[in-house]
Image 1: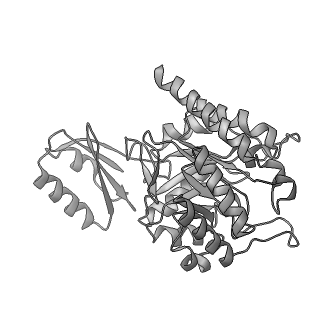
Image 2: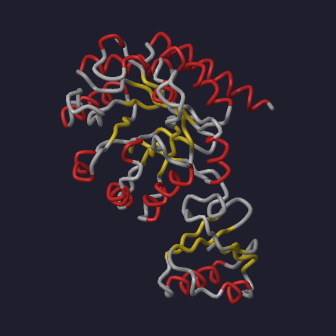
Image 3: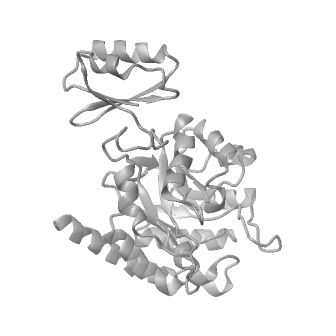
Length: 335
């Protein structure tokens, strides 16, 4: 349920309303925007008398939300959210470019790539330390040692680090990670999502391979209902009957998610296509569709990468792509 307050409603009466609602056992979130104040009610609101609330002097309207996701709903939070991680920001006008290798392989590799992507304009460094792989025989990542190498790269470049958490049991190891990624395979790992909801760590939540947008938003709701509102959504392609690309990039998800939710939406053209030659065009298309950022795999030696080399572009390809993305965004802002 959402309660929209009248403009210039006295603060004292707002506090009284919030206190009264909390005594009903409801979670109460207050969002004060530029033009209106919205009070969002979380929990079982079936016993709440909407007509009684509507009759209050400071209340403009009362709306019931039936779609299941409340915290991430734009009706709950009309203005775009801006998520900050390690000094970088994504959303509400801040465009983030996350770049780096699929997997951390060595100190020399991750530091060299970090230096090059930063020079090209990246705002954050990605790199997998814990790797979910389809085959148990594939490279599973350097794990804790990989996290140490990411921290070295951050120290050398100043770039905030982004890496994937696969299990709530490893959460303590991620205390010094700037942006924790929840991968497509774990989008509906509800115990993991609930554990992340108890932290205040920024979370990058990727859409599952066969998940609907509603399911993605409900997964975000798990994190936010736990108290952590620092969530970024990521469209990374879904599985369809197409057999020419690794997945199918759903560009329509960008405007739809931004219509439904206030959370930032970024796009991963690397996993979506699976082919490095397709990454630049899909990154530009995503920028034109209005995304809040990109996450792109960049490797200095893709042919010998331990993971997903086929979808990784080289640093010398990444630099001109960043310039083109900036040009697309500049053109959008002119219109």
